[in-house]
Length: 563
Image (cartoon, rainbow, N blue to C red; front, side):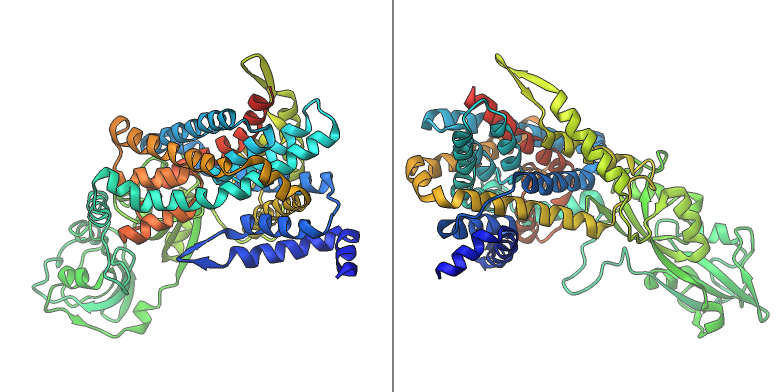
């Protein structure tokens, strides 16, 4: 065993990969539907290995990985950040700000009552508010304190100890509050409330195991009977009668000849028409006596599907049903809308925003024309713009060092960590205006965020391992109960602030609370118990602000407690 411990200490780079592997294995284990996740799993794995192996940690490698993670997070949420400040997104944003500020003041108050040092206080905040990146900003802040090196190392180790103690209840507490306690306090039935919100938004809920008809369209051929209501009408006039149902005539066979369905072409009895739309509506369109025809040549229409990034200012802010009435939307069908990596429930009342990714389907020329009116086609990319990536992190870090803000009698630097996060946010937002700027493949962003944070936290755990037991004894049981207070107070304040001040829909309040704590699992729990995806509409505007504020609080709480 001694040789293995010596091996771990001699080759810290290999030890780090081992810890990450163990961390992901621990994080993947779920009990009652709850799991620690890979980041917290890596922290516990690092602490465990650090108990018996004193593994040297490279400060530069730690900072490098953490900055990559922060830039990736900012880059991911950038497209939604500014749009969240507009229209209906403002209420969840205000909810997130109130929750985050309440969490900060509660953490400071608890830390002072318990007499915690800056390290324990920062870990209390990062664990109880489930924002592991705050460990990184706190670490940087402690590294800048005018203290002996040994004292700074001790305080940094305390961050990991407190985070490990407080995180489990932090995560479980938010999940249970949003999905169980919150609805009871509001006096609502989650399923009934979600169904009412869906109806208000115009969402048609499908039965279990079936697909929504809003997205399910097909093309079929029918012979137009003499008594059909569309006989004698021009194509545009016939389609206008079923505008809400989005029925489109694609092509017409007349006297053996195939004609393209131009808007002013009149329809005649005996025409064979290729129609796209929902089947039950198509029958109403051509009449119940219409004969369905098998005409492969007429239906041989090249169809394509495309993901398009919404960048056009004149389209942003419009509802789906408003966009559907535009000339370029004829024969175009919307299959999905993704915002911040999360699929939104489709409804006619859904408001489109810059940075949304729209999946559209239709004839090739139609889709190509629509893409030019929506924004930029999201084509697969395989190379990273390292010029923008490297320069943005450098400039963001530089700004973080130069910019400071007063807290009482102190001046606290923004820090390279927060500067890098903001740089990623700016680059991500700029992509909604200049789609070819700073392109990074989704897989690369996922690697930056997943590996960057897991490796950083694993190294933090390895550093804390040798002193974990002694530090835990020093903090005492009060740290655990203090973490519970820090977790729950922002939830209660946010719940009633959203209900009585902002007057938000209860489902959107619960989604907003999950977003404020950046706890996707809590949003998923609300969706599961409500049987509806609509909670995501409260989550997506709130989560970018949750990430930014909670990450910044790591710097702030160190400055306040150490001062």
